[in-house]
Image (tube, rainbow, N blue to C red; front, side, top):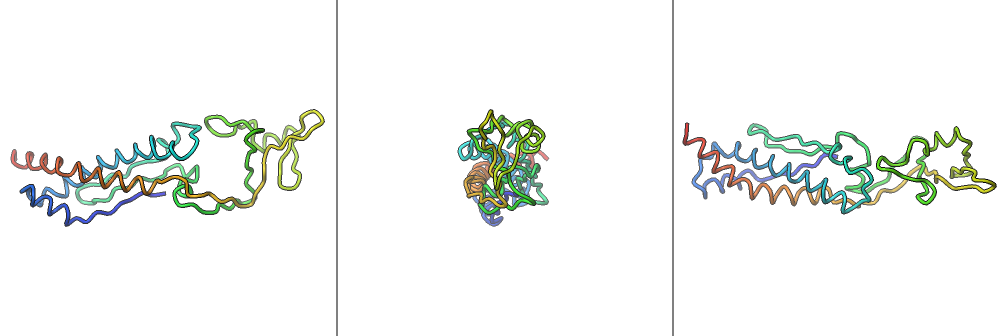
Amino acid sequence: MELAVKFDFSDFLKKADELKAASDQVPYALSRAINQAGEDAQNVLIQQTWPRSVKVRNPSFMRAALRRVPSTKHNLTFEIVDVLHRGSLKKHAIGGSKTAKSRFAIPVERNTPRGSHGVPQSQRPRALGRKGAFVIGNAIYTKVGKRLKLRYILKRSIFQPKDVAFYEDFEISMRNGVRTAFPLWLKRAMQTRRIR
């Protein structure tokens, strides 16, 4: 997943004219504004968008997954990228089917405990297989006394609905942040320019 937003550069040149600022300072000021807004947008995604949309089991996951690729005055491109490629973040953002190489083992929540990092290793299908779990049809069971306990449902594909507004929240946060920060950074750039 890569999050990016585009701006019309001419809008910032107009703003520079309104502020009676030199146009040669616009790329620097815009880059600083974009990076400041990008850091704020990343925090919105981590602290608001993700927790509002899903049950958070590992609070540090999103901070580890999302990394900023900052802009420079020579390259006014800013991105937030998923560096872990775990958790199907793009599927959460746009929806779609996921297909397994063999089958997905979907834990039955009432019978399979989850911790902050998901299902513990000792309760995953491979570990349960070593303890005598067995497959019947499209399910994995363990034996508890004389009864069978359903632990996992097996599926070749699953549908992930669009349930996290990553793109929408990123764009709103970036546009608002850049509009607010740009005039401030432009004024600072002009102050620095006058000192020279």
